[in-house]
Length: 209
Ligand SMILES: CC(C)(COP(=O)(O)OP(=O)(O)OC[C@H]1O[C@@H](n2cnc3c(N)ncnc32)[C@H](O)[C@@H]1OP(=O)(O)O)[C@@H](O)C(=O)NCCC(=O)NCCS
Image 1 (tube, rainbow, N blue to C red):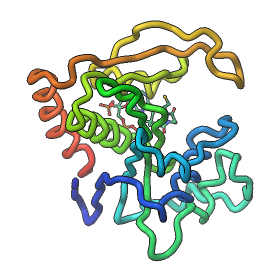
Image 2 (image 1 turned 180 degrees about the vertical axis):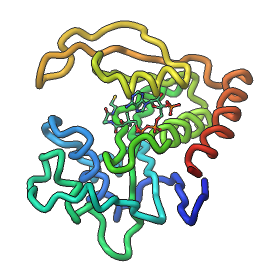
Image 3 (image 1 turned 45 degrees about the vertical axis):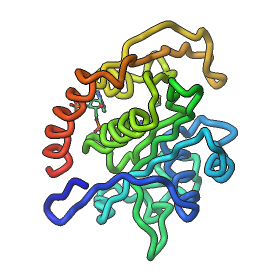
């Protein structure tokens, strides 16, 4: 858990009570996704892992509030006072969803953080935690597809040693955009695990700011 100025960020497995909030964050992060992921179904599947980032503080800035939008598919929706969480619930800031496609390979199906909480290290913390989880399970590689135009995500993946292995032409139904297939191999190696430890030191400092 990273702590700072009274804020803490932690990563844990998704619980049943988180499902509506994770769906909310997904619809904010992927407004074009249809149909949305059934996290209720994925929650039951053995091959699925869903990790969530939990904050002890909503940290929603007043200036981001929009009183106008009630539409969940509208990118501004989350900026209203409705954050998808309710009193008594953990406040989630992001999620990462993976499949164990084979014993040796983990596949990131999606990762998303609340717009109000981006560039704070949360996406990185989620990816880091997913890698650690996959390493513990014995996976040797982590792979995913990403839109060729998705500069923030590609930069995050490169930071964790993922490189482009190929393209899936017209992979995305909404605009026929190509997907890059990005993979990091040999995640069990000592070198890679050491590199994760180094990153965690820097990441904790970033999360603490
Ligand atoms: C991609 C995403 C998960 C990143 O989450 P985040 O919490 O903002 O990311 P972090 O603050 O942890 O940033 C980690 C790294 O990601 C990269 N990154 C994140 N946002 C970036 C941006 N706007 N521009 C360039 N690089 C960016 C950087 O490499 C950054 O490392 P740095 O801080 O050392 O520069 C988030 O932008 C998101 O939810 N996007 C919408 C959903 C999506 O596209 N998911 C990926 C689908 S494949």
